[in-house]
Structure formats: C-alpha cells, structure tokens
Amino acid sequence: MVKPGSLFLALLLPVVALSPPLPAAAKAQVARTYKIDFENEGLPARQKELLGHYADQIVQWASVGPLVKAAEAQSGRPLTMDHIHQIDVAWQRGEDPEGLATGLAHNDCAQALQSILAANPGYGEAFVCDSRGALVCMSRRTSDYWQGDEAKWTRAWAGGTGVVFVSKVAHDDSTGTDLMHISVPIRAGSRLVGVLTMGKLLAGN
Image (cartoon, rainbow, N blue to C red):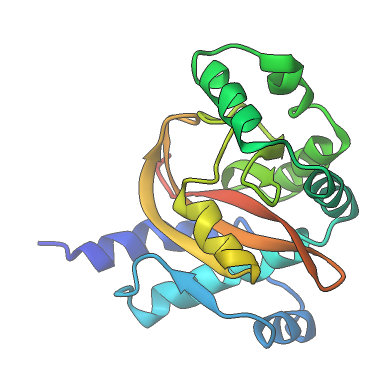
C-alpha cells in the first residue's frame, strides 16, 4: 500500500526538472524574506522543500514590471464590491461582462503571464488579483472573476500584510486538471498591491 505522502512526492518529483533552479545567491536572498503558509501543514519536510523551490521562483515573478504596474493601478482605483459581485455573477454564467473576460486575457499583464508560462513548463494557469480579490489579468479564463472569497487570495493577502500561500492539491474546474495553487504577494515598493497565483501541475496531468 502506497502512503498518501509517498504518492504525492512521487507525483511531484518528476516536475522538478521542468523548473530550472534559481541561482544560489538569489534563492538564499528570497528565502530570508518570507515564510510559507501551507494549507496542509502536515506535509513531510521533503515535500515542503520542493514546494519552497517553486515558491522562490514565483516570488521573483511577482516583481515583473507589467504585473506590478497593473496590480498597483487597479488597486489604486478598485471597483466597489457591489460592482465586483455583479461582474462575477455574469462571469460565472459564461458571459463577457464589460469585455473583461476578453481584456484581462490580452492586456500587458496577461502577456507577461503568458511569457512566464512559456518559459517555465509545469504550470496550468496563472492570474493576478487586486486588493479586493478582483482579477487584474489571467493566462486563461478562470471559473470566477472575484477570487476574494477563496483561500488562495485571502491567505496570501493576509489582511494586507502579504504571505506566501501553498494550497492543497485540488481539481480545478477552469483547467480540468489537478493543481496546487501557490499565491504570493505583489508589492510596489513596500505597499501590498495584489496577489499572483500560479497553478502548479502534478505529473500525470
């Protein structure tokens, strides 16, 4: 009988080679600046180490100019929550409210996400949210427009302090695959302006 932890590690290990390691100096610098909040705190140390490798990379991607600029701009003039909920309802019906489903997949921020995904195989999706959990850009259409009620935003936003969050493995409806979401804060200087979420594919997807 295969233990769940061993199965998880067996699935995760083949994907490590798909993401080139960070330079040692850069990795050490990133590791000193944040703590990871694991949704599954019971993961063995080896699994956490592997996930920390991915988190190190995503923290660096969260500083890419178009992502920071877009998150900062939208968080500086956020929509009202009533407006966000109206868009979200239409979005979940499969509509393109205010052209957002099209625009958020093609703006400069989305193009930067596509470049990151193209250069780093092993991720099923990526998206950026603002200070209220509303989408800023996405690599592909998500199931919801508003992510502000989901752990991958709430735990990464962390009440405005910003924390790196690693979710449990779960089936993702928008991609049709099993993903582990890694969410990291986006900062403009010292200010928290958004959250970048990357959906990590497991081997076999």
